[in-house]
Length: 287
Length: 334
Image (cartoon, rainbow over all chains, first blue to last red):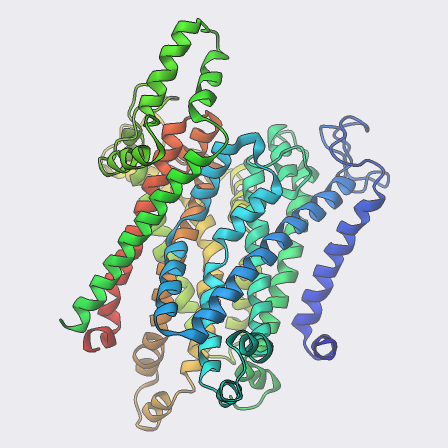
Protein backbone atom coordinates (compact mmCIF):
# COMPACT_ATOMS: atom_id res chain seq x y z
CA UNK A 1 0.00 0.00 0.00
CA UNK A 2 2.66 2.54 1.05
CA UNK A 3 4.91 1.31 -1.71
CA UNK A 4 2.15 2.02 -4.22
CA UNK A 5 1.68 5.53 -2.86
CA UNK A 6 5.44 6.14 -2.94
CA UNK A 7 5.66 4.95 -6.53
CA UNK A 8 2.69 7.05 -7.53
CA UNK A 9 4.26 10.10 -5.92
CA UNK A 10 7.51 9.45 -7.71
CA UNK A 11 6.28 8.63 -11.19
CA UNK A 12 2.84 10.20 -11.56
CA UNK A 13 2.89 13.97 -11.78
CA UNK A 14 -0.88 14.31 -11.43
CA UNK A 15 -0.88 12.24 -8.28
CA UNK A 16 1.93 14.32 -6.87
CA UNK A 17 0.13 17.57 -7.67
CA UNK A 18 -3.17 16.31 -6.26
CA UNK A 19 -1.46 15.00 -3.17
CA UNK A 20 0.37 18.31 -2.60
CA UNK A 21 -2.74 20.47 -3.06
CA UNK A 22 -4.86 18.31 -0.77
CA UNK A 23 -2.13 18.14 1.86
CA UNK A 24 -1.71 21.92 1.68
CA UNK A 25 -5.39 22.50 2.40
CA UNK A 26 -5.40 19.89 5.17
CA UNK A 27 -2.41 21.44 6.91
CA UNK A 28 -4.07 24.83 6.65
CA UNK A 29 -7.24 23.36 8.17
CA UNK A 30 -5.33 21.67 10.98
CA UNK A 31 -3.80 25.02 11.98
CA UNK A 32 -7.15 26.00 13.46
CA UNK A 33 -6.26 24.08 16.61
CA UNK A 34 -3.97 27.00 17.41
CA UNK A 35 -6.48 29.68 16.48
CA UNK A 36 -6.45 32.79 18.66
CA UNK A 37 -10.15 33.45 17.95
CA UNK A 38 -12.16 30.22 18.13
CA UNK A 39 -15.60 29.87 16.55
CA UNK A 40 -17.77 32.71 15.43
CA UNK A 41 -16.73 35.30 18.01
CA UNK A 42 -17.93 38.66 16.73
CA UNK A 43 -16.33 42.09 16.66
CA UNK A 44 -13.03 41.09 18.20
CA UNK A 45 -11.16 42.91 15.45
CA UNK A 46 -11.72 46.05 13.39
CA UNK A 47 -14.22 45.09 10.64
CA UNK A 48 -13.66 45.26 6.86
CA UNK A 49 -9.85 45.42 6.96
CA UNK A 50 -8.33 44.45 3.59
CA UNK A 51 -5.61 41.78 3.50
CA UNK A 52 -2.46 43.11 5.13
CA UNK A 53 0.57 41.83 6.99
CA UNK A 54 -1.44 41.86 10.21
CA UNK A 55 -4.60 40.23 8.84
CA UNK A 56 -3.39 38.05 6.00
CA UNK A 57 -6.77 37.43 4.39
CA UNK A 58 -8.40 40.59 5.82
CA UNK A 59 -11.24 40.77 8.31
CA UNK A 60 -15.00 40.36 7.84
CA UNK A 61 -17.73 42.91 8.39
CA UNK A 62 -18.43 40.99 11.57
CA UNK A 63 -14.97 41.72 12.93
CA UNK A 64 -13.47 38.27 12.42
CA UNK A 65 -10.11 37.29 10.99
CA UNK A 66 -10.71 35.55 7.66
CA UNK A 67 -7.56 33.39 7.91
CA UNK A 68 -8.49 31.76 11.18
CA UNK A 69 -12.14 31.48 10.40
CA UNK A 70 -11.40 29.89 7.04
CA UNK A 71 -9.03 27.44 8.70
CA UNK A 72 -11.73 26.26 11.07
CA UNK A 73 -14.32 26.32 8.27
CA UNK A 74 -12.22 24.07 6.03
CA UNK A 75 -11.76 21.67 8.93
CA UNK A 76 -15.48 21.49 9.67
CA UNK A 77 -16.39 21.13 6.01
CA UNK A 78 -13.79 18.39 5.56
CA UNK A 79 -15.01 16.46 8.58
CA UNK A 80 -18.55 16.63 7.25
CA UNK A 81 -17.39 15.38 3.86
CA UNK A 82 -15.35 12.54 5.33
CA UNK A 83 -18.24 11.42 7.55
CA UNK A 84 -20.55 11.25 4.54
CA UNK A 85 -17.93 9.45 2.48
CA UNK A 86 -17.21 6.81 5.11
CA UNK A 87 -20.89 6.15 5.85
CA UNK A 88 -21.90 5.99 2.21
CA UNK A 89 -18.87 3.77 1.39
CA UNK A 90 -20.16 1.21 3.88
CA UNK A 91 -23.49 1.07 2.05
CA UNK A 92 -22.01 1.24 -1.44
CA UNK A 93 -19.44 -1.50 -0.80
CA UNK A 94 -21.89 -3.88 0.86
CA UNK A 95 -24.62 -3.42 -1.74
CA UNK A 96 -22.22 -3.43 -4.69
CA UNK A 97 -20.20 -6.47 -3.67
CA UNK A 98 -23.12 -8.57 -2.47
CA UNK A 99 -25.15 -7.69 -5.54
CA UNK A 100 -22.31 -8.45 -7.93
CA UNK A 101 -21.26 -11.69 -6.24
CA UNK A 102 -24.64 -13.27 -5.55
CA UNK A 103 -26.27 -12.18 -8.81
CA UNK A 104 -29.70 -13.50 -9.75
CA UNK A 105 -32.70 -12.37 -7.77
CA UNK A 106 -30.71 -10.62 -5.04
CA UNK A 107 -28.88 -8.62 -7.68
CA UNK A 108 -32.11 -7.63 -9.41
CA UNK A 109 -33.79 -6.52 -6.18
CA UNK A 110 -30.75 -4.59 -4.91
CA UNK A 111 -30.14 -2.89 -8.24
CA UNK A 112 -33.79 -1.97 -8.53
CA UNK A 113 -33.57 -0.25 -5.15
CA UNK A 114 -30.29 1.29 -6.28
CA UNK A 115 -31.82 2.69 -9.48
CA UNK A 116 -34.74 4.06 -7.52
CA UNK A 117 -32.47 6.05 -5.25
CA UNK A 118 -30.45 7.26 -8.23
CA UNK A 119 -33.58 8.70 -9.82
CA UNK A 120 -34.59 10.64 -6.70
CA UNK A 121 -33.44 14.28 -6.81
CA UNK A 122 -31.20 14.71 -3.73
CA UNK A 123 -31.30 18.44 -3.21
CA UNK A 124 -35.11 18.83 -2.96
CA UNK A 125 -35.29 15.88 -0.55
CA UNK A 126 -32.51 17.24 1.66
CA UNK A 127 -34.16 20.66 1.58
CA UNK A 128 -37.42 19.02 2.70
CA UNK A 129 -35.58 17.34 5.57
CA UNK A 130 -34.09 20.67 6.59
CA UNK A 131 -37.47 22.35 6.26
CA UNK A 132 -39.21 20.04 8.71
CA UNK A 133 -36.32 19.88 11.18
CA UNK A 134 -35.10 23.49 11.11
CA UNK A 135 -32.94 24.16 14.18
CA UNK A 136 -32.82 20.47 15.07
CA UNK A 137 -30.87 19.78 11.90
CA UNK A 138 -27.34 19.16 13.19
CA UNK A 139 -24.42 18.37 10.93
CA UNK A 140 -24.09 14.69 11.90
CA UNK A 141 -27.77 14.23 11.07
CA UNK A 142 -27.29 15.96 7.73
CA UNK A 143 -24.28 13.72 7.10
CA UNK A 144 -26.40 10.61 7.69
CA UNK A 145 -29.10 11.90 5.33
CA UNK A 146 -26.54 12.74 2.66
CA UNK A 147 -24.88 9.32 3.05
CA UNK A 148 -28.26 7.61 2.62
CA UNK A 149 -28.68 9.42 -0.70
CA UNK A 150 -25.07 9.37 -1.91
CA UNK A 151 -24.10 5.72 -2.32
CA UNK A 152 -26.05 4.70 -5.39
CA UNK A 153 -23.81 5.67 -8.25
CA UNK A 154 -20.75 4.08 -6.69
CA UNK A 155 -22.40 0.84 -5.68
CA UNK A 156 -23.18 0.27 -9.37
CA UNK A 157 -19.54 0.78 -10.21
CA UNK A 158 -18.38 -1.55 -7.43
CA UNK A 159 -20.95 -4.11 -8.54
CA UNK A 160 -19.54 -4.15 -12.06
CA UNK A 161 -16.06 -4.95 -10.75
CA UNK A 162 -17.45 -7.55 -8.40
CA UNK A 163 -19.42 -9.11 -11.25
CA UNK A 164 -16.26 -9.79 -13.20
CA UNK A 165 -14.44 -11.20 -10.15
CA UNK A 166 -17.22 -13.68 -9.63
CA UNK A 167 -16.30 -15.81 -12.62
CA UNK A 168 -12.56 -15.76 -11.96
CA UNK A 169 -10.64 -18.93 -11.22
CA UNK A 170 -9.65 -18.05 -7.66
CA UNK A 171 -13.27 -17.44 -6.67
CA UNK A 172 -14.15 -20.94 -7.80
CA UNK A 173 -11.19 -22.30 -5.83
CA UNK A 174 -12.44 -20.47 -2.78
CA UNK A 175 -15.95 -21.83 -3.13
CA UNK A 176 -14.76 -25.40 -3.65
CA UNK A 177 -12.40 -25.26 -0.71
CA UNK A 178 -15.37 -24.35 1.47
CA UNK A 179 -14.87 -20.65 2.14
CA UNK A 180 -18.01 -18.87 3.29
CA UNK A 181 -19.49 -16.16 1.10
CA UNK A 182 -18.46 -13.44 3.55
CA UNK A 183 -14.90 -14.72 3.67
CA UNK A 184 -14.65 -14.75 -0.10
CA UNK A 185 -16.00 -11.21 -0.33
CA UNK A 186 -13.82 -9.95 2.49
CA UNK A 187 -10.54 -11.79 1.88
CA UNK A 188 -10.55 -12.46 -1.85
CA UNK A 189 -12.61 -9.79 -3.56
CA UNK A 190 -12.14 -6.69 -1.43
CA UNK A 191 -8.46 -6.19 -2.35
CA UNK A 192 -9.43 -6.09 -6.04
CA UNK A 193 -12.25 -3.65 -5.38
CA UNK A 194 -10.12 -1.31 -3.23
CA UNK A 195 -8.71 0.92 -6.00
CA UNK A 196 -12.17 1.58 -7.40
CA UNK A 197 -13.37 2.26 -3.85
CA UNK A 198 -10.65 4.84 -3.46
CA UNK A 199 -11.62 6.43 -6.77
CA UNK A 200 -15.31 6.60 -5.85
CA UNK A 201 -14.44 7.83 -2.35
CA UNK A 202 -12.63 10.87 -3.76
CA UNK A 203 -15.54 11.66 -6.04
CA UNK A 204 -17.99 11.13 -3.22
CA UNK A 205 -15.96 13.43 -0.98
CA UNK A 206 -16.16 16.14 -3.63
CA UNK A 207 -19.89 15.55 -3.96
CA UNK A 208 -20.48 15.63 -0.18
CA UNK A 209 -18.44 18.79 0.33
CA UNK A 210 -20.15 20.62 -2.49
CA UNK A 211 -23.48 19.52 -1.05
CA UNK A 212 -22.54 20.92 2.34
CA UNK A 213 -21.25 24.12 0.78
CA UNK A 214 -24.42 24.53 -1.25
CA UNK A 215 -26.75 23.96 1.67
CA UNK A 216 -24.86 26.24 4.02
CA UNK A 217 -24.50 29.00 1.42
CA UNK A 218 -28.29 29.07 1.46
CA UNK A 219 -28.28 29.11 5.27
CA UNK A 220 -29.80 25.63 5.50
CA UNK A 221 -27.37 24.18 8.03
CA UNK A 222 -26.21 25.24 11.45
CA UNK A 223 -25.16 28.78 10.52
CA UNK A 224 -23.34 29.34 13.81
CA UNK A 225 -20.75 26.69 13.02
CA UNK A 226 -17.99 27.95 10.72
CA UNK A 227 -18.04 26.18 7.35
CA UNK A 228 -16.89 27.29 3.92
CA UNK A 229 -20.46 27.70 2.71
CA UNK A 230 -21.41 29.36 5.97
CA UNK A 231 -18.74 32.02 5.50
CA UNK A 232 -20.18 32.88 2.11
CA UNK A 233 -23.66 32.87 3.60
CA UNK A 234 -22.60 35.55 6.10
CA UNK A 235 -20.72 37.46 3.41
CA UNK A 236 -23.91 37.52 1.34
CA UNK A 237 -25.90 38.62 4.37
CA UNK A 238 -23.57 41.61 4.67
CA UNK A 239 -23.64 42.37 0.91
CA UNK A 240 -19.89 41.77 0.73
CA UNK A 241 -19.79 41.83 -3.09
CA UNK A 242 -21.56 45.17 -3.34
CA UNK A 243 -19.56 46.82 -0.59
CA UNK A 244 -16.32 45.53 -2.10
CA UNK A 245 -15.21 43.20 0.71
CA UNK A 246 -13.97 40.75 -1.94
CA UNK A 247 -11.58 38.91 0.37
CA UNK A 248 -14.47 37.58 2.45
CA UNK A 249 -15.76 35.64 -0.57
CA UNK A 250 -12.62 35.13 -2.63
CA UNK A 251 -10.59 33.16 -0.08
CA UNK A 252 -13.31 30.62 0.78
CA UNK A 253 -13.88 30.05 -2.96
CA UNK A 254 -10.15 29.73 -3.53
CA UNK A 255 -9.81 27.17 -0.74
CA UNK A 256 -12.63 25.06 -2.17
CA UNK A 257 -11.21 25.22 -5.68
CA UNK A 258 -7.74 24.17 -4.49
CA UNK A 259 -9.14 21.36 -2.37
CA UNK A 260 -11.38 20.05 -5.15
CA UNK A 261 -8.63 20.23 -7.73
CA UNK A 262 -6.40 18.24 -5.41
CA UNK A 263 -9.00 15.57 -4.68
CA UNK A 264 -10.01 15.39 -8.31
CA UNK A 265 -6.43 14.88 -9.51
CA UNK A 266 -5.95 12.17 -6.89
CA UNK A 267 -9.08 10.42 -8.13
CA UNK A 268 -8.12 10.70 -11.80
CA UNK A 269 -4.56 9.49 -11.30
CA UNK A 270 -5.69 6.53 -9.22
CA UNK A 271 -8.27 5.72 -11.88
CA UNK A 272 -5.48 5.70 -14.43
CA UNK A 273 -3.40 3.52 -12.18
CA UNK A 274 -6.28 1.05 -12.02
CA UNK A 275 -6.85 1.05 -15.76
CA UNK A 276 -3.74 -0.56 -17.28
CA UNK A 277 -4.59 0.63 -20.79
CA UNK A 278 -4.22 4.30 -19.92
CA UNK A 279 -1.08 3.46 -17.95
CA UNK A 280 0.44 1.95 -21.08
CA UNK A 281 -0.60 5.00 -23.02
CA UNK A 282 1.12 7.24 -20.51
CA UNK A 283 4.33 5.27 -20.84
CA UNK A 284 4.18 5.80 -24.57
CA UNK A 285 3.52 2.18 -25.43
CA UNK A 286 0.89 1.04 -27.89
CA UNK A 287 -2.45 0.70 -26.16
CA UNK B 1 -43.88 -11.05 -25.69
CA UNK B 2 -40.94 -9.59 -27.58
CA UNK B 3 -37.91 -8.11 -25.89
CA UNK B 4 -38.81 -4.50 -26.63
CA UNK B 5 -42.16 -4.79 -24.86
CA UNK B 6 -40.50 -6.55 -21.95
CA UNK B 7 -37.91 -3.80 -21.77
CA UNK B 8 -40.52 -1.03 -21.76
CA UNK B 9 -42.65 -2.84 -19.17
CA UNK B 10 -39.62 -3.24 -16.92
CA UNK B 11 -38.86 0.48 -17.23
CA UNK B 12 -42.47 1.36 -16.46
CA UNK B 13 -42.29 -0.84 -13.38
CA UNK B 14 -39.13 0.97 -12.29
CA UNK B 15 -40.88 4.31 -12.87
CA UNK B 16 -43.81 3.32 -10.66
CA UNK B 17 -41.38 2.09 -8.01
CA UNK B 18 -39.46 5.39 -8.05
CA UNK B 19 -42.64 7.42 -7.70
CA UNK B 20 -43.88 5.17 -4.90
CA UNK B 21 -40.59 5.42 -2.98
CA UNK B 22 -40.28 9.16 -3.53
CA UNK B 23 -43.80 10.00 -2.42
CA UNK B 24 -43.54 7.66 0.57
CA UNK B 25 -40.22 9.24 1.50
CA UNK B 26 -41.66 12.75 1.27
CA UNK B 27 -44.59 11.63 3.44
CA UNK B 28 -42.37 9.98 6.04
CA UNK B 29 -39.98 12.93 6.24
CA UNK B 30 -42.80 15.36 6.86
CA UNK B 31 -44.77 13.13 9.22
CA UNK B 32 -42.14 11.46 11.34
CA UNK B 33 -40.17 14.62 12.02
CA UNK B 34 -40.35 15.91 15.58
CA UNK B 35 -41.48 19.30 14.30
CA UNK B 36 -45.22 19.66 13.82
CA UNK B 37 -45.86 21.67 10.64
CA UNK B 38 -49.17 22.95 11.98
CA UNK B 39 -47.57 24.33 15.13
CA UNK B 40 -44.70 25.71 13.09
CA UNK B 41 -47.01 27.57 10.72
CA UNK B 42 -49.07 28.78 13.69
CA UNK B 43 -46.01 30.20 15.41
CA UNK B 44 -45.10 31.93 12.21
CA UNK B 45 -48.60 33.34 11.78
CA UNK B 46 -49.16 34.37 15.39
CA UNK B 47 -45.78 36.07 15.58
CA UNK B 48 -47.26 38.74 13.35
CA UNK B 49 -49.92 39.68 15.90
CA UNK B 50 -53.24 37.81 15.91
CA UNK B 51 -53.26 35.59 18.99
CA UNK B 52 -56.87 35.28 20.05
CA UNK B 53 -56.93 31.74 21.51
CA UNK B 54 -60.19 30.80 19.75
CA UNK B 55 -58.94 32.05 16.42
CA UNK B 56 -55.71 30.09 16.96
CA UNK B 57 -57.70 26.94 17.73
CA UNK B 58 -59.77 27.39 14.56
CA UNK B 59 -56.66 28.00 12.56
CA UNK B 60 -55.05 24.88 14.01
CA UNK B 61 -57.98 22.77 12.86
CA UNK B 62 -58.08 24.24 9.39
CA UNK B 63 -54.34 23.89 8.99
CA UNK B 64 -54.51 20.24 10.06
CA UNK B 65 -57.24 19.72 7.48
CA UNK B 66 -55.27 21.63 4.86
CA UNK B 67 -52.14 19.56 5.41
CA UNK B 68 -54.16 16.34 5.58
CA UNK B 69 -52.97 15.62 9.10
CA UNK B 70 -56.22 14.18 10.43
CA UNK B 71 -56.70 10.56 11.37
CA UNK B 72 -54.01 7.96 12.05
CA UNK B 73 -50.78 7.62 10.13
CA UNK B 74 -52.15 5.18 7.57
CA UNK B 75 -55.21 7.32 6.83
CA UNK B 76 -52.95 10.31 6.42
CA UNK B 77 -50.78 8.33 4.03
CA UNK B 78 -53.74 7.30 1.86
CA UNK B 79 -55.03 10.86 2.05
CA UNK B 80 -51.62 12.16 0.94
CA UNK B 81 -51.60 9.86 -2.08
CA UNK B 82 -55.04 11.12 -3.03
CA UNK B 83 -53.81 14.70 -2.91
CA UNK B 84 -50.64 13.90 -4.84
CA UNK B 85 -52.55 12.11 -7.60
CA UNK B 86 -55.01 15.00 -7.87
CA UNK B 87 -51.99 17.36 -7.83
CA UNK B 88 -53.75 19.27 -5.07
CA UNK B 89 -51.37 20.61 -2.44
CA UNK B 90 -53.75 23.22 -1.09
CA UNK B 91 -53.19 26.97 -1.09
CA UNK B 92 -49.74 28.39 -0.58
CA UNK B 93 -49.38 30.09 2.79
CA UNK B 94 -46.92 32.71 1.63
CA UNK B 95 -48.92 33.63 -1.47
CA UNK B 96 -52.36 33.03 0.03
CA UNK B 97 -54.80 32.06 -1.52
CA UNK B 98 -53.02 31.05 -4.73
CA UNK B 99 -52.98 27.24 -4.96
CA UNK B 100 -49.52 25.71 -4.79
CA UNK B 101 -50.08 23.91 -8.06
CA UNK B 102 -50.67 27.24 -9.86
CA UNK B 103 -47.36 28.58 -8.55
CA UNK B 104 -45.62 25.41 -9.72
CA UNK B 105 -47.35 25.54 -13.11
CA UNK B 106 -46.08 29.11 -13.58
CA UNK B 107 -42.54 28.22 -12.56
CA UNK B 108 -42.20 24.87 -14.34
CA UNK B 109 -41.78 26.18 -17.92
CA UNK B 110 -38.79 28.28 -16.81
CA UNK B 111 -37.08 25.33 -15.17
CA UNK B 112 -37.87 22.96 -18.03
CA UNK B 113 -36.60 25.47 -20.58
CA UNK B 114 -33.39 26.14 -18.68
CA UNK B 115 -32.79 22.45 -17.97
CA UNK B 116 -33.50 21.12 -21.46
CA UNK B 117 -31.37 23.80 -23.13
CA UNK B 118 -28.41 23.40 -20.79
CA UNK B 119 -28.55 19.59 -20.74
CA UNK B 120 -28.65 19.42 -24.55
CA UNK B 121 -25.72 21.83 -24.93
CA UNK B 122 -23.72 20.15 -22.17
CA UNK B 123 -24.38 16.63 -23.39
CA UNK B 124 -23.65 17.29 -27.06
CA UNK B 125 -20.61 19.51 -26.43
CA UNK B 126 -19.12 17.36 -23.67
CA UNK B 127 -19.49 14.16 -25.65
CA UNK B 128 -18.22 15.69 -28.87
CA UNK B 129 -15.09 17.15 -27.31
CA UNK B 130 -14.61 14.00 -25.24
CA UNK B 131 -14.92 11.76 -28.30
CA UNK B 132 -12.49 13.90 -30.29
CA UNK B 133 -10.03 13.92 -27.38
CA UNK B 134 -10.28 10.15 -27.10
CA UNK B 135 -9.89 9.62 -30.85
CA UNK B 136 -7.11 12.13 -31.56
CA UNK B 137 -5.05 11.48 -28.49
CA UNK B 138 -1.94 13.16 -29.83
CA UNK B 139 -3.61 16.53 -30.42
CA UNK B 140 -2.02 19.20 -28.27
CA UNK B 141 -4.99 21.56 -28.58
CA UNK B 142 -7.44 18.92 -27.34
CA UNK B 143 -5.13 18.11 -24.44
CA UNK B 144 -5.08 21.73 -23.30
CA UNK B 145 -8.83 22.06 -23.78
CA UNK B 146 -9.32 18.87 -21.77
CA UNK B 147 -7.19 20.23 -18.96
CA UNK B 148 -9.25 23.44 -18.82
CA UNK B 149 -12.53 21.50 -18.79
CA UNK B 150 -11.26 19.17 -16.08
CA UNK B 151 -10.10 22.05 -13.92
CA UNK B 152 -13.56 23.60 -14.00
CA UNK B 153 -15.28 20.26 -13.50
CA UNK B 154 -15.06 19.79 -9.72
CA UNK B 155 -16.13 23.34 -8.84
CA UNK B 156 -19.67 23.30 -7.41
CA UNK B 157 -22.54 24.91 -9.35
CA UNK B 158 -22.96 27.67 -6.87
CA UNK B 159 -19.37 28.87 -7.19
CA UNK B 160 -19.29 28.74 -10.97
CA UNK B 161 -22.50 30.76 -10.96
CA UNK B 162 -21.17 33.18 -8.36
CA UNK B 163 -17.90 33.74 -10.24
CA UNK B 164 -19.79 34.36 -13.50
CA UNK B 165 -22.18 36.65 -11.68
CA UNK B 166 -19.37 38.70 -10.16
CA UNK B 167 -17.38 39.01 -13.38
CA UNK B 168 -20.07 39.25 -16.05
CA UNK B 169 -22.71 40.87 -13.86
CA UNK B 170 -20.88 43.29 -11.56
CA UNK B 171 -17.32 43.92 -12.74
CA UNK B 172 -18.24 43.93 -16.44
CA UNK B 173 -22.01 44.36 -16.39
CA UNK B 174 -22.67 42.63 -19.71
CA UNK B 175 -25.43 40.27 -18.62
CA UNK B 176 -28.43 40.74 -16.35
CA UNK B 177 -28.01 39.08 -12.97
CA UNK B 178 -31.60 38.57 -11.96
CA UNK B 179 -34.95 37.45 -13.32
CA UNK B 180 -36.09 35.40 -16.28
CA UNK B 181 -36.95 38.21 -18.69
CA UNK B 182 -36.99 41.98 -18.83
CA UNK B 183 -39.44 43.37 -16.34
CA UNK B 184 -42.58 45.18 -17.49
CA UNK B 185 -42.39 43.47 -20.85
CA UNK B 186 -45.62 41.63 -21.67
CA UNK B 187 -44.90 37.96 -22.12
CA UNK B 188 -45.74 36.82 -25.59
CA UNK B 189 -44.17 35.06 -28.46
CA UNK B 190 -42.62 38.11 -30.12
CA UNK B 191 -38.97 38.45 -30.98
CA UNK B 192 -38.16 41.00 -28.30
CA UNK B 193 -39.50 38.82 -25.52
CA UNK B 194 -37.77 35.70 -26.73
CA UNK B 195 -34.48 37.59 -27.01
CA UNK B 196 -34.96 38.96 -23.53
CA UNK B 197 -35.56 35.45 -22.18
CA UNK B 198 -32.42 34.16 -23.91
CA UNK B 199 -30.41 37.15 -22.66
CA UNK B 200 -31.54 36.60 -19.06
CA UNK B 201 -31.09 32.86 -19.27
CA UNK B 202 -27.55 33.11 -20.60
CA UNK B 203 -25.63 33.23 -17.32
CA UNK B 204 -27.72 30.56 -15.54
CA UNK B 205 -27.41 28.27 -18.55
CA UNK B 206 -23.68 28.95 -18.87
CA UNK B 207 -23.17 28.05 -15.20
CA UNK B 208 -24.99 24.75 -15.69
CA UNK B 209 -23.08 23.99 -18.90
CA UNK B 210 -19.68 24.73 -17.34
CA UNK B 211 -20.52 22.69 -14.25
CA UNK B 212 -21.73 19.70 -16.26
CA UNK B 213 -19.33 19.62 -19.21
CA UNK B 214 -16.45 17.86 -17.45
CA UNK B 215 -18.40 14.76 -16.46
CA UNK B 216 -19.43 13.94 -20.03
CA UNK B 217 -16.01 14.87 -21.36
CA UNK B 218 -14.11 12.55 -19.03
CA UNK B 219 -16.54 9.68 -19.50
CA UNK B 220 -16.61 9.95 -23.29
CA UNK B 221 -12.85 10.32 -23.63
CA UNK B 222 -12.12 7.14 -21.74
CA UNK B 223 -14.97 5.25 -23.48
CA UNK B 224 -13.75 6.28 -26.91
CA UNK B 225 -10.12 5.48 -26.17
CA UNK B 226 -11.31 1.99 -25.21
CA UNK B 227 -13.55 1.52 -28.26
CA UNK B 228 -10.80 2.71 -30.61
CA UNK B 229 -8.73 -0.37 -29.81
CA UNK B 230 -11.65 -2.75 -30.46
CA UNK B 231 -11.34 -5.27 -33.28
CA UNK B 232 -14.22 -3.93 -35.33
CA UNK B 233 -12.56 -0.51 -35.55
CA UNK B 234 -9.24 -2.01 -36.63
CA UNK B 235 -11.08 -4.11 -39.21
CA UNK B 236 -12.91 -1.05 -40.54
CA UNK B 237 -9.61 0.79 -40.83
CA UNK B 238 -8.05 -2.10 -42.73
CA UNK B 239 -11.11 -2.32 -44.96
CA UNK B 240 -10.52 1.30 -45.93
CA UNK B 241 -13.59 2.89 -44.35
CA UNK B 242 -13.21 6.68 -44.29
CA UNK B 243 -11.86 8.14 -41.05
CA UNK B 244 -14.82 10.43 -40.56
CA UNK B 245 -17.20 7.52 -40.87
CA UNK B 246 -15.18 5.37 -38.49
CA UNK B 247 -15.24 8.16 -35.94
CA UNK B 248 -18.97 8.88 -36.09
CA UNK B 249 -20.47 5.48 -36.93
CA UNK B 250 -18.03 2.96 -35.51
CA UNK B 251 -16.54 4.65 -32.49
CA UNK B 252 -18.69 7.52 -31.22
CA UNK B 253 -21.98 5.72 -31.67
CA UNK B 254 -20.84 2.75 -29.64
CA UNK B 255 -19.41 4.93 -26.92
CA UNK B 256 -22.64 6.96 -26.77
CA UNK B 257 -24.64 4.08 -25.29
CA UNK B 258 -23.25 4.16 -21.74
CA UNK B 259 -23.42 7.95 -21.86
CA UNK B 260 -27.17 7.86 -22.54
CA UNK B 261 -27.65 5.54 -19.57
CA UNK B 262 -25.46 7.93 -17.61
CA UNK B 263 -27.69 10.84 -18.57
CA UNK B 264 -30.73 9.04 -17.18
CA UNK B 265 -28.83 8.31 -13.97
CA UNK B 266 -27.60 11.88 -13.55
CA UNK B 267 -30.88 13.73 -14.07
CA UNK B 268 -31.69 13.89 -10.37
CA UNK B 269 -28.30 15.48 -9.66
CA UNK B 270 -28.61 17.90 -12.55
CA UNK B 271 -31.98 19.00 -11.25
CA UNK B 272 -30.41 19.71 -7.87
CA UNK B 273 -27.82 21.93 -9.54
CA UNK B 274 -30.56 23.86 -11.30
CA UNK B 275 -32.26 24.58 -7.98
CA UNK B 276 -29.11 26.31 -6.78
CA UNK B 277 -28.40 28.19 -9.99
CA UNK B 278 -31.98 29.43 -10.21
CA UNK B 279 -31.81 30.75 -6.70
CA UNK B 280 -28.49 32.47 -7.32
CA UNK B 281 -29.72 34.25 -10.45
CA UNK B 282 -33.19 34.85 -9.05
CA UNK B 283 -34.54 32.86 -12.01
CA UNK B 284 -38.31 32.39 -11.73
CA UNK B 285 -38.27 28.57 -11.82
CA UNK B 286 -39.12 25.75 -9.43
CA UNK B 287 -35.79 25.90 -7.60
CA UNK B 288 -36.28 29.48 -6.55
CA UNK B 289 -39.87 28.65 -5.59
CA UNK B 290 -38.64 25.82 -3.38
CA UNK B 291 -35.99 27.88 -1.60
CA UNK B 292 -38.31 30.85 -1.14
CA UNK B 293 -40.90 28.45 0.27
CA UNK B 294 -38.34 27.30 2.84
CA UNK B 295 -37.39 30.84 3.82
CA UNK B 296 -41.06 31.77 4.24
CA UNK B 297 -42.01 28.60 6.10
CA UNK B 298 -44.54 27.66 3.44
CA UNK B 299 -45.20 23.99 4.21
CA UNK B 300 -47.57 23.16 1.37
CA UNK B 301 -45.38 24.88 -1.21
CA UNK B 302 -42.21 23.03 -0.16
CA UNK B 303 -43.97 19.68 -0.05
CA UNK B 304 -45.63 20.39 -3.40
CA UNK B 305 -42.44 21.38 -5.21
CA UNK B 306 -40.51 18.41 -3.77
CA UNK B 307 -43.19 15.91 -4.80
CA UNK B 308 -43.62 17.40 -8.26
CA UNK B 309 -39.87 17.41 -8.84
CA UNK B 310 -39.66 13.73 -7.87
CA UNK B 311 -42.40 13.06 -10.44
CA UNK B 312 -40.76 15.22 -13.08
CA UNK B 313 -37.31 13.68 -12.74
CA UNK B 314 -38.72 10.14 -12.73
CA UNK B 315 -40.73 10.94 -15.84
CA UNK B 316 -37.71 12.37 -17.64
CA UNK B 317 -35.68 9.28 -16.75
CA UNK B 318 -38.48 7.10 -18.13
CA UNK B 319 -38.50 9.15 -21.33
CA UNK B 320 -34.75 8.65 -21.87
CA UNK B 321 -35.08 4.94 -21.10
CA UNK B 322 -37.88 4.55 -23.64
CA UNK B 323 -35.91 6.44 -26.30
CA UNK B 324 -32.84 4.33 -25.60
CA UNK B 325 -33.77 1.43 -27.97
CA UNK B 326 -33.68 3.96 -30.82
CA UNK B 327 -29.91 4.27 -30.50
CA UNK B 328 -29.20 0.78 -29.20
CA UNK B 329 -30.74 -1.78 -31.56
CA UNK B 330 -29.67 -4.64 -29.28
CA UNK B 331 -32.60 -3.91 -26.97
CA UNK B 332 -35.00 -4.46 -29.86
CA UNK B 333 -33.33 -7.58 -31.14
CA UNK B 334 -32.79 -9.10 -27.75
